Amino acid sequence: MPEMNRDWIQEQLEAAKVKVGSGKAIIKLLEAWEQVPKLSDAMTDEVLAIFPLLAKGHVLKVEETDDDYIWISLEPGKINVSDVVRVKTDAFTDKLGPIHNGRVGTVAAVRYGDVIFNATDGKSPVLNGVHYSPYKLEKRYRKPE
Image (cartoon, rainbow, N blue to C red):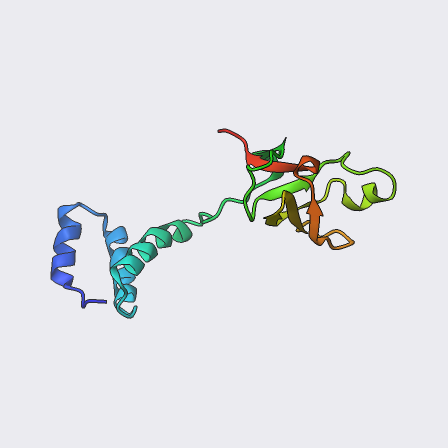
């Protein structure tokens, strides 16, 4: 990074009436900033946007819970690869029900009307590349805020 002009920095801190302790901390941060290799403008913007959040202990990505979503019956033609879907709880009966019903996964592809599903719920058996009718699935939507 460019070399600091300590006199100019001191003038700026005094003009803004920054408290002495805060000013010393700012100068220490700027000294550390001088040691960072030259960054592009975009990278500098990203670093300066993220650093204060982490310095304050803020999370960068809010953890999502199931309470943030609702499940709605899937409509053919309104599905995209990587959408999160769930097999309806009553989609299958007999031996297939316990294996498939309620399983959660992502859409790997849509072929000839079938939704190709990869399970992401960590349950056994692993269901990857399984074909489902869209009428047997529900799509996860974020609840309106």
